[in-house]
Amino acid sequence: MISKGNDLDVLRKEYRNMELTRKAFADESNTVLRKQQQTLDMLRKEKEELKSDISALHARITMKPLNSFEQHQLDKLNTEINRYKHAISNEKRKIHDMKQQISVCQDQVWRQRRAMGGANAAMENQRLVEKQVRILENRLDQAIVKFNKSSAHNRNLRQEIDDLRGERITFDSVYKKIQQGLQDKRKQMAY
Image 1 (cartoon, rainbow, N blue to C red):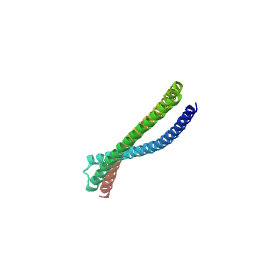
Image 2: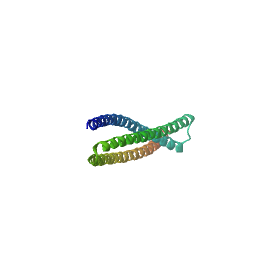
Image 3: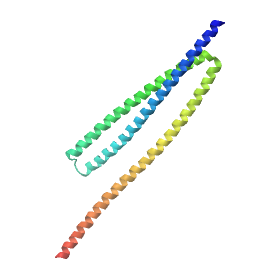
Image 4: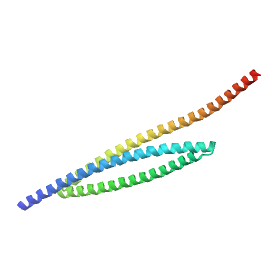
């Protein structure tokens, strides 16, 4: 009887230690994942800015040939794009590794719970897991909706910027023609 009580106390201590370790690891992993997600977001934003810069340079190429400075800038931007693509893939790989480590840790905790709690603990764990999955799926859906709205808004803004640039080019050419006509009229009136 005493040894069963001692065994139960030892198992409870092991369970508490594993639970604390799991919580600490989960907190640390979540912090790392958040930081990595922020880094990815920053890299994606910079990637979009670089793409817009490159598209502006490509638009200028069609108008006139690039001088050496512009070519250097274009090469520099292409190098940065490649560097950011590499950094993004590294961050994705790290996130994947962290998710695998979290999954392994969760499996260990669930096995320990099942060993300690019996059939009711397994059912309780399953309900908690299903609830957490639903919560995370809802968060994912909300994040996807928010991302799609932002993407649509950005696309509209880019289109508006392109339209305004086109209008500016048109207005500049009309202005130059009017200026030239005005100078011609002045010359005619002077003679």
